[in-house]
Image: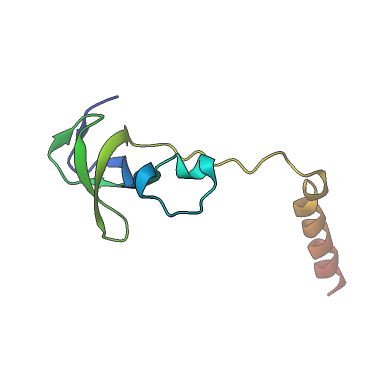
Length: 104
């Protein structure tokens, strides 16, 4: 991973509760894992590399401290497979709007 510099968009990781401090009554698989968060923001330190403990300022202005895990992290959003029923919605809507405009 490249070295991050002040102001770079980065992602940090922070453990909020280790497994031993989680609430009682959780399923065993959940209780065995730490409660953790990932936060993206602008690096406050002058420089940092992966694994360093750093502070970031989020878009909302919060200052959060955690372990640096990524510089300029990608957005990995997956909405799943295309739904056949929705593939032609845009074309059908344009067709209906054009027909309505021609009637007026």
